[in-house]
Every structure is written in C-alpha cells, then in structure tokens.
Length: 435
Image: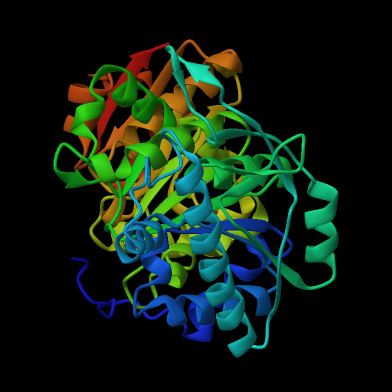
C-alpha cells in the first residue's frame, strides 16, 4: 500500500524561493498527469492547491488523469472481471463500460477540487482516436491510439482561464468511446500543445533503474536502457519511461516523474534546483547555452564557495559582467547549476583556455562537469582552436584521468597570460588537450 504523504525539507511556498522562476515559466504550458491512485490519495487536495499556485503565477495548466485504481475497485465492487486496467492491453466491452464510469468519477473529483480552489475546469471531448485493431493476431477491441487532438479547442479553454481536464478516453471516427493509456495521453497532449513540461504524479518516488531512483536521466541513456535492459527499470515506471522518450522525441523538452503522495512535491520539483523526483531531459548539449548579462549574479553566487576554497580564481560580479560573453552555463529546468568560461587570446587563435568550471555540489558526480568541458572543446574547435588549456590547483586529476588532458610546461601560455599566472601565486598545474 502507498505510504502516507510526508513533509519535504524544502519549502518553495516561500515567495522569495519562487520569484526567481516566475519570469522563466510565465505563459508556458505544463501537462500534469495524475495516476488514478494519486487522485485517491489523501495528498490529492494539496496537489490541487499547488495547481492553483501555478495558475496564479501565470503558468498554463492542462490536467490528464488515469483510472487504474478506480477501475480495479469498481471491478471488484460489481464482480465484473476486467481485461486490462491500464489502457495498454485489450479492452473488452465490460471493461470499457466500467472505464467510462470510473473516468467520470475521477474527472468529477478533479473538478470538485478545482472548484474548492476557485479555479474553473472543464472536461473535453477533444481527443480523437483510432482502434489499435489486431496486433500479432489478437484483437485489441476498444483499446485505441490517439489520432489527433483538437488543440484549438483546448487552447480556447486555456485562454479563457479554464483548466482542461482530459480523461483516458477518446472518441473514434463514429463518435463512440475508446480507451487510451493515460501516460500516452499526456505525451500526445504535450506534443499537440507545445507544452514545455509533462509532470507525471505517481505513487513512486521517481524512476527507479537498477534498484535506485534516478534524480535525472538523459533521454538517450533512457532509450538505450529501454532497448537493451528494460527489466532494470522498475515495472511501475516502464510505461512512463517509454512515453517520456516519445514525448521528448516529439518536442517536449522535459518530463518529470514525481511522488504525488509527498506534501509540496509538485512545487518542490518545479521551483527548486534539486527537485524531489526524476527529471528526464533531451540532448545533453541542449542544456548548455551561452551566458547572458541576466546570468551574472547567478554565476557569481554559484562560484563563491569554490573561490573561498581556492578552487577557482576570485572574480567580482563586475569582472564576470565584463567577460560574460566568455561564459557558458548548464541549466536543468531553466535553473543554472554549472558554468565555465572559454577564453581566446589575441595573436594565438589556435589556442583556447577553459576556466571557472564549477558544478553545484548536489549535481556533482553526475557527469555534468565532463559534458561542460566536452562542449567547450567542441566550441573551441569550431572557432579554429587546435589546442585547449586548463589551469587547476585541485582538480587536475579530473582533467587528466577523465578528459584526456596532459600536464605541460607553463611556457605554453601566451606572454600576457603567463604574466597573470606568475602574479597570481597559485602555482596551478597547466594542462593541455589537442583538439
């Protein structure tokens, strides 16, 4: 049985914690998908309060839901066997009838909760579907795949301040009801509406691979896992893993899998750097971008602790602002969690130097530093450099053991840079890598 809701340590309901994210998320569409068991959980009311917070901050929300738990309970109550509870196997006529009843009940509970938070909601018939037909000789009967979504209809509701509530039922060419998997439904909604996030609220703490919950997974790594060893992914999360890959392949940047039983879990996942569930994201390098002036304060704050430990050279905010065009940042969910600089020297176009490499402690040992360095090497090579340098006092093992750098004599430094090196007194090791 699911454990009761637990309080989380971060309290993003503190307005100061949320404000930095508001400009980034305003006007975006989030698809929030509730498992049926989460709608039945005692924390469900708190989640709808969180939805109200998102709406108050100008974030557009579409709600989808499953009915697995309710369908099983209705089957047991009425003594009617069901052919499939999740909407991915065969749906026979009795199962479809119970699914329609269970879906109506769950949708009503969501609308009731929205009303209690002074939010307008509406169920829709915006999802059109086609029967799966016969697969490997077996008729799937009333199980369907999404054919199209009336995105104009859904957008019109959103534009009027109404939250669309989308059930795991769709309508065939003849207008009759068909069953669709709710995980698939969320992915299709996100693609059609150009949503920037799908947030699956589940009775699990995240996506578990090899017995451990993963705080973040790159889509290519997840795709490989599904292809080569899907059994290592917890069975409860495989459907969401498959549909997360599908969603990202079709343009949704990020998919979150979050424990909906935890108090404040939805807001913590969205409005904190660490999050509380699993983030599945697209191409690694898509998370790295050139820094802008609005990032100066974040870069300065990010690197201060490393400067105190003498891992990085002291840089004032003014110095960072002056050289901001040299910086790159790594974002997770639009939060800067790592940075580095890439410097070219006048008169030595074939030589570049990377510096100011720092990754937030929570995200260290996740390969982010390596991705940042590889990206800097790629950028340096594209700009004509044949060799890249790194100066390090405490992390030279990271560069030599993991990234193909070798220690070289300081005389490789251009004259001006060599003078700075001597004046600093840091006696850093000079490392080089051929591009």
